[in-house]
Length: 339
Image (cartoon, rainbow, N blue to C red):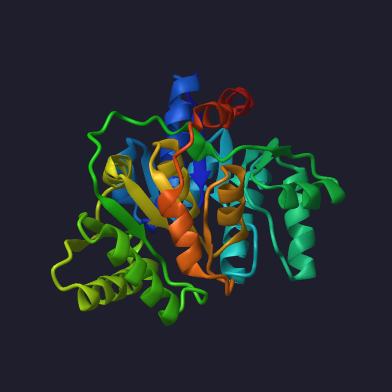
């Protein structure tokens, strides 16, 4: 009998991390559950359907969502930070509505690799806890979320990030340097200037690729960085790469010699691929990743000398992290057995 599975999350917005998580989730559902039909709620259903070979319904097509959930066996919510009201109260209400509707229809619900909270509105927090208690299977990606749920009577499993399960192809290595930036308050103009100067100092003879993973948040700052580099060195070989598929982004990262990156999943994929990675930390998860793998990182909120850290990074040998990486897998088999 065919299992019908609906997946809800921040999909269709061309966010590299979320789209990679969705790709891995879909691949593993198909791997461990051969007879299944998958429907993803996406803001770009045509693209999602074409790239992943799934059914897809527009995120705000309520009629389509009602129909899909009424016919499904299970709704999977995640991954990412969906259940929080810091970014938007509306998005929190949306993701809770999907779960509530599924539970109202008597469907299984699963929370997939999420970071929970903060939910500052006390009423919405209670509603979220009520929904989470009724979920069949809950996996969270960090200790803070795990403790929050535990203290509120929700049984959860602390999991590794599913992107560690990404299967990498053999890609020809190059001498290219990748720069991945996103707009954030801590990435000030003076820090951009300093990083540009250091990139030119150490890598002016290499091809520099600046990656815009999500144009809404990345393109402006990527273009600014490109102009900074060209102002310092008009002959430097630099270009901004945008509007490429997730698979192409992954291939590009695999081919790099060096990656200087802000986004957590860019750093993760680089480490998994054996690229020399310098994280630019704008979030505790990026700092935690750097510390776990004992690599240099630049804390964009700190006043520490970027030059000193960069110098150490340039002279830092790449460690063999294969054993540590191989141990960091998400247990999809156990999760999908619950379907």
